[in-house]
Length: 396
Image: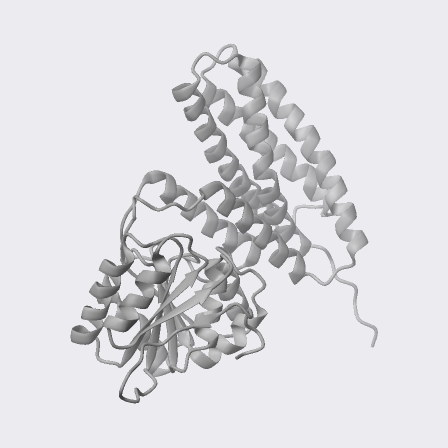
């Protein structure tokens, strides 16, 4: 077994009387506690591949430490259906399941999709065609590209767009939708990229694409028809925090600077942030007596966002003058937009579930939520401003 894999991977194949050839494409479905929907959706996918898909294909059900009957269902499907491979991993993590499945596959192309089959199956061939033809090394579905048809709630739509905007600003990515559960790549590309990806959970998708882009692989983006699974059990807050930590790791790892310099930047950023937070709370308090909560919040945020960017530009990152001034403040306004969405969402939740709270409690909640956006602000500003610093000339 590949040394890059966990020792907990337990493949199981159905007993067959004939020798089956390696498939052209291996479609992996990572699952955790999906006994309710697994059989129905795998049979639907299997029937589609048998009738509509022009290449030989296998379905790998990668069960990552389910505690219900998912593993039993997966093994039963492997006994009933040809070219279904169950794979059990004893630790949770979608990325861990994908890594185990892809690195043990003998197919020419490896792919994956979510078990709910949210993406229309008619996109399977357009997904793999660029990889099969040699046009691209990696192919991904996009819910944000022009031509995509998406049915999902406003909350998830806003979160997705803010997240991918953050990736563009902080990491300079060229792709538009990092986390759509619909991807394919050549197997040799997967064997090169996957061992370099440190995250083995939800951030795996994003990091994989960032690593691919930095390595110079060609990424094709396909607009898809996608329908949200309303029964999804994904913890949005925990996933968001994991994503922010991952973005931080990739962003800070990109710059080859000494740790003391980063430490000084963080210390100065913290001081500016504390002053900005105090100014925000004071301004909100003053405005709240005459204006509604959302208006007070928006005015306080935009004023402190402009001041925060100007202060960090000069004090934290040592950038002076007017060079790229508009670009830097545009990045600050992106951070402001993230904070605005989060804080206004908090106001809406407070007015819905706790309408009688005091102004002091309201300010406390908003200040805490605003602090969550601070990490994103640092990533954005640091990515934009670091490259504005003059670089020392090399000795001839």
